[in-house]
Length: 551
Image: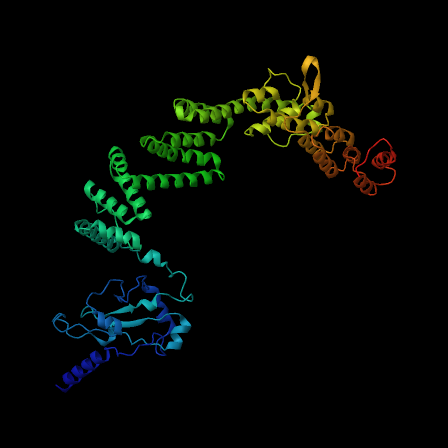
């Protein structure tokens, strides 16, 4: 009886010793050999990649143990089965089947690379199967572990990405936005409050005004407060949300709205026109519809003059010369010819188109002649192309390079004067400047010679001989040529002042003798350089006894 009682006490002592304390056990304690630890590490699948703090409990045969509770797994205790869960045929296991406890210190764990907590859970009465638990911080083995037993975590633990929570949140957000939009549409916003928010810069929405009457009320309220930005914003909202015919009709009934809308379109066009200087071709295409809309509005309002000028601007903004010529012809036929009030403007547009039609072949011919080595182009190279140049510049170009061409040629200066109805002053000034630069003094004399009575000739200048002398002096004409035309200036005092300005001493002396001003001639002669022609003429005049000087 005493032996049975002693055996029962030994068994109870065994089961009490099998409960693991709350403190951590060292896997590599002094009573556990390295061979046993390596065998334990080789036989288990360690480490998990989940980011939670779950603890996996496995048997020595790699089968999961579901009877271990979460609290016991985390704390590292060995959870013994209850008496009810054990078969009655085996109430106590034999002590020979139980392995010794395994614990290790912190220093031993760090040196070997394994940080695991070991617990034992008996699965049956015949054999007690210890289990090994590993937490999140125990996910790696040291490289000292046998390479044959090392396996990749990706091979052992399948990855899992859950998108159900993201989809659920997205659906909830969509439903919330739908409810908010529905609620906002059900709210009633007055036009006064909306206009007030627009003026104060507060958040507002025009989408809540859905009927035509509400939109027109909103426009009327904006006109009443005289705020241009609010009026323009409401007009653009109306343009996008109602029919064009209805939009034009309601706009015509409100002159203030029309003026603001036209101002907006003009400002938008000016922005496009400014952008053309940076990227001409692309901006021309972009601005086409802006031109069309503004022209349609002006035509609807019967503002034919503004619409015609707008179309003219559109035509001259074409990127190439040939397209510009065609656009000008089309604009002339569509907007200028049939308007009696625009007869003068129609003539100007006609001359612009004719000038481009003249410049195109001249540029083509002269560029080829310059490439072939024409002496005139070699002596005076062309700096720029004649295309898109003004009329006077074109006339000067033709006077300079084609001054002797016949009237029936496109390059003839006289033909340009006749077709474009230039005045004699414009023609003479331009031709005189070109011939003076070329040093064609004979050509200048021909230009200033007119026929008189009975076949006689005389020198005539429609711009005045003072202007002729100004052009000659600017181009450094010889003194004898300049003196010749200085003597043709009417008025002694005027001729004297101009001669002194250009330092033509011979003409100054002649004018002072003509005025019989002896004192002034003596003063002027004292300033002349010795041996000059002007000084000799002055001394001869002072010694002359035939001149009656003023007293």
